[in-house]
Image 1 (cartoon, rainbow, N blue to C red):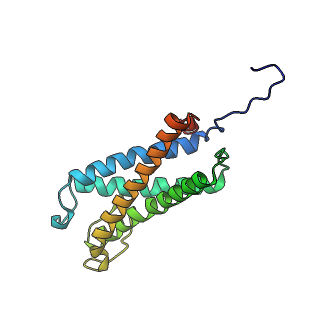
Image 2 (cartoon, helix red, strand yellow):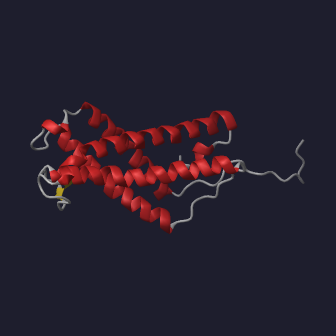
Image 3 (tube, rainbow, N blue to C red):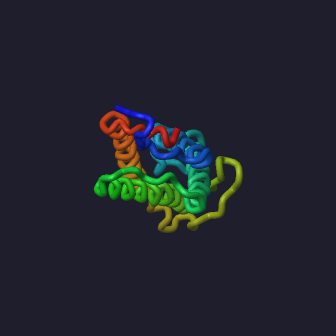
Length: 182
């Protein structure tokens, strides 16, 4: 029974700031688009010049790289809400999954950019501004397509773990963890 003298502890930590939430959900939406297009587009090995879905994939990938890079700078600059997770194992797993996702969110588009440059494709930021070539045509960059695809699948697995953890917190632990990012 609660009395006026009872101390109540909040189970939900403070929310992330507006910019962090905007970066998070922008990246999430772009990733949904990117994975959808990636599976629907024709085999990139047979494409000589990116057009159609392949051009969209390259453009969204470059935009995702820029937005995520700005997000990383923001993460370093601001103080995140503290974790109220008392279980060290879960806290360790959360840090490991988040760190892996951050590395892969940089690695996947960089490998895609290297692969596109190695094929001699022009890479444009969001399909508009031309980006520099990271590799010359017919260099080893062209051979990185499988690395790009494989690392994208690994990223998708980590995203799945991230979503699973949020669902467990919402339904299992009932700690309203999702409210921090909404």
